Image 1: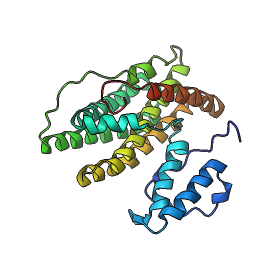
Image 2: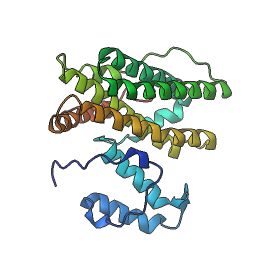
Image 3: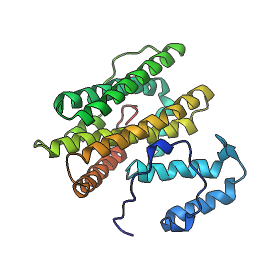
Image 4: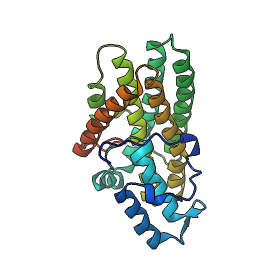
Length: 255
């Protein structure tokens, strides 16, 4: 039905997706996509599940749990093929920036113990991921260095309202959308790269990025009603999709 947004999936179940008995209840286009994939790939296993279930799960996750309104195009995968080292360096910067975002939210809303608790968890996980990417770079002989940022983050941050509590809602939802796009692209990298070590590395990061997205959206609901948050999330997700579609000539994780 037009305008319908299903509730967020339980991020704790990422990686434990069951078979789908109610496939006929899904929107028509998604149900058809599942049926076509099933006939093509139902006997092939991946991560212990029939491949059709595994990939259909990520498709559902991208559209519903992650609140994204677009999928990454082949243009970005071409950037990956031509500039993988630079993408990996930018990934390290992204993890560092994500930790900084969570720290800044703690400083801005120090009187919100629920937010502080969740942001401390995210800070620690993002710094751990930062260290993991640095180790990956070192193993591959890639020097971590300063990179010019692409326009994605700046364009999203320009949308943040100046007045509270709308400002808090926007900061949290934009943080969540960035985590969501990272999650989607980690899954694409997992599928696309021909390097088994790198593929497994990006598979291992998917759950935490999805969980971070869900945390940001849930915290936004502590500053405004569900209706207000859902409407604003829809507006910001549309803008985010436009920025992704426009792309950036710099090969970056969010270009």
